[in-house]
Image 1: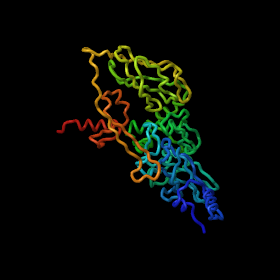
Image 2: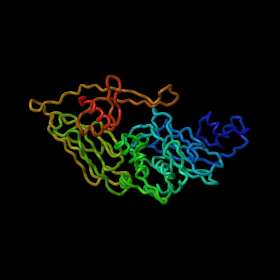
Image 3: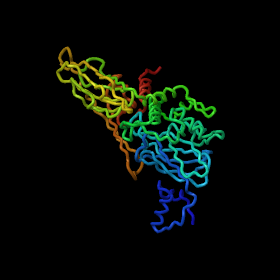
Image 4: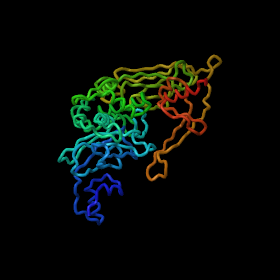
Amino acid sequence: MKIPYQWLKDFLPTSASVETVADILTLAGLEVDGVLGTSFRFKGVITAGPVLPGNDLYVVACAADGKTELGRDESVEAGGAYEFSLVKGYTGTVILRVYSRSSAVPDYMDEALLAPSNLSTVISAVALISQGMAEKIVNVNMVTDLAARMAGVKTVTSGVSESANVVAINQAMSKAVGLGSDEIINYTPSTTVDVNGKTNPNPNLIGYLLDWISHTALDSLGGDVEKVQQKLLENLTLAGGVVTVNGGMQDGIRQSQTMTAATSPKLTISDSEPGTAKSAVLFILNFSEAVSDFDLSKISITGGTASGFKQVSASQYTVVVTPTASSTTDIVLTVAAGSVRDLAGNALASEVKATQPVNTVFGPNNPAPAADTVAPTLVISDSEPGTAKGPVLFTLNFMVIVTHKPGTLALVNRIIVVAGSAIVMDGPRDAVLQQLQQRSQPQA
């Protein structure tokens, strides 16, 4: 009796090779006489950002028509690795699509938010299988998705254009973004952060590009990656086997390439208090590029006590400093030259210092600030809408009115508005602020 490997996987999801499964069945007493027609394998790494443990991603391979399924991997490993077999004998163009089963399950660490995120769009890659191949490595990410879209794969059901040469398009995309002459699907990203949101000291150029796409989605289009991909596609032209990059994407690629250049990082320090501080001050440290191994020990602080040090992104950090009681001594933050390096190993060239005036000598002419009496609200949610059968991610969101100061509000990427115990508004900062402003305007 002959049984398809894919039929077995429908009953027992596994990423093990066909040969391994055959050995297991034989050891279990179900002797397998031989393995037929299963010598071709797909494998690679999926990168939306770093793929999280417990993700809900799966990969489907389709023929050039975009509809005929050739194989799939029902589970993607932490880090994004996938692997599955294809029926032997198929040659031609293959479309690989990566899906998320549930919007409630976090799939990857978003480089811009530094928070677990769900893959809200489908990302693709296109590849060519030639006669005699035993294995094909296809990495799938936002840049391979752009190449697939240029080949005609613009929706979850569309196929490759009849005139498209997928190898040439993949190679042209690599050259356009400065990666070299190999196919874009052969480059494995090394991202700017790891699965915990910590800075990766050794990202590569395609990792920087993915970081830039993530930040573009957050800063310009409210976190909608699908809209970013459509916008970027408008900046790409394919003619004569050459991809030309136009418009805003040129600046993004230039920024990505600049990050790898041998230049020293720059640092600016600002804070949330425009006048004289009477209470705790939030200091914002912005580097011109991602830096590694930066922590509170790298900051010299006088005139106050530090707390709440936080990494906001790979290039931005914050720290809260409470001024000394009954004092008019300025708070001074100093980051010494050479104390911090960028991801290429270049050191901060010169000392950077910030000074904040203080007056905590309170009296009739200098009244003390009002006490904070607003209690925080805690909302706990989890990644499992039904009955849990495996690991569950719990998210604890503390919400409290923190400040109206523009310097602090500028750090916020997302705003959640709570009325009573219900969330009435949740979204990107600028969108929520616009809605609140519209609500506050008198009706005609």
